[in-house]
Image (cartoon, rainbow, N blue to C red):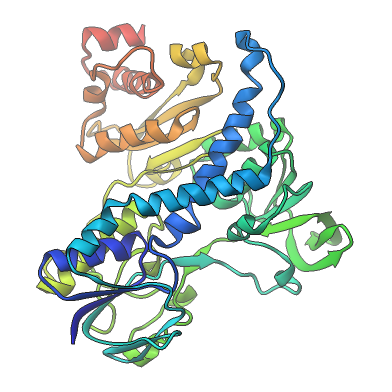
Length: 470
């Protein structure tokens, strides 16, 4: 009998298999599709490739400002999708993790089709595979939320973008969280008329309010229709030109039409078809698997990691979960889950990112100081004509520790990553203010914001920091 079967080969599953094999267990890794899961095949890797193409198109429009004159590039969408497939294949082919899995002797079962439990210690897959194991780690990730609305089958998800044969002339995006805004931003750059619809009071509801407001304003200024508090969708209908969305706006019935409608209404755990009841695993509302601090489910021999736990649904968190679940599955429940600093961001236009608490959340439990440094104060941003945006720091007044960093503008994701390193090291804001920073760089805005916070808190600074704050 296999010691541990890992179900799902995304970031959580791959790391779980490697860690468990490193500890000497006999491992089988089972996936319904390709190695890499959503992250490599349907998420960050292909999406970021499209986002990079969108960036190149936007950058080309800046060339005349620097005396570079030439014809404007024309997008050939089929060639772009070919490049996306090429990148995905290259990521798979050059993955050091796959090499480690093979070297460790992990038995890998790919393209198995749907996987389901048939008992506490047995699973079956759609292509006839049957495995028994002492323990299991469920890492099946998540899927796009499908709304129970008439005509929903006429809409697309972000994954369906890869099936398009041409750039649509118009697009409705329903749901303006990170996925919806990213899809809308990309296709707007490709020439699509895009309208974002958000039922809540603002787009990017999980971001700091100032960041969400700045992104919304810039999207509108660039020509993206952004509709907040738009009402409730009642149905979708097929039309000669594409899809019509009918919705209730207050006391009025309204409709809007486009060639394509993309529903980005959230991300939910992919657990519906696992038949977890047969294994004694309790599922909470929304399909989330209930786990304890050791990532054990209600069945003590079954663990869960990544998106299926319903916590922070990001690759870094999934990787850490997979490592931890495997450690506890093999060695016993000895390593509890601890909160880790986890940055997130999106390669939209404008780019935005965050790490830690928003200002609103921080003020609920802390006495805070906030500082905002606009990009137009950074020399690198001025040189490159990228002066839109800001870096905002949220700092605890008593301890001088950084509680959150929120950035919108050029290189936002990299800036937030630097802040995450400082926060992980529990670096007081005045220490960050004293860090020597290369000149000119976009990272300056983070250190400038730290200098301002240190000055407001009355903390001592070095000569360089004083110069920055001058």
